[in-house]
Amino acid sequence: MPLPRLEDMDRILDRITTDALGDTIRYRPAGEPAYGTLSADVNYVDGELPFDGGQVIAQDVTVSVLMVDVPAKPGRGVRLQLPKVTARTFHPINVRRDRMGTSWMFELKDVNSNA
Image 1 (cartoon, rainbow, N blue to C red):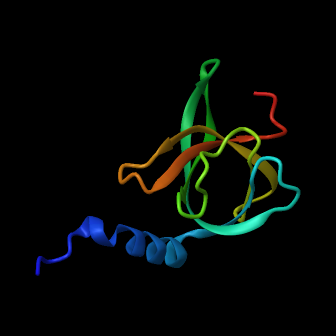
Image 2: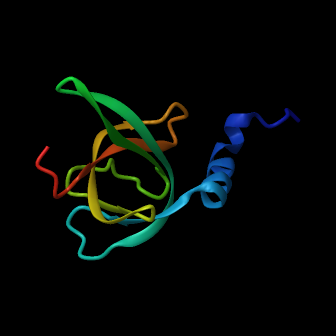
């Protein structure tokens, strides 16, 4: 009998690591009235951006959710709330599959932002 390959265990390992290491976010699918919770890998990264001869700090948050939890590709109607960025609501932008093809990855745009 052949040994199992890593790809054979992707779903199990994804679930275990996301549940153990991920943040619990609030996620509302497009057209749904209520938020639900799910585990996600949230990367809060600060970076410097040039701004009229100066520098500003911008937070570029990347979120990864398991496709098994979110089967439909997240669109602009989706709303998310993060535990470490309180009192703000976001929608996904730049949605794509991750390297392994098991998660949706995207950045966030503040719903109330005019930028």
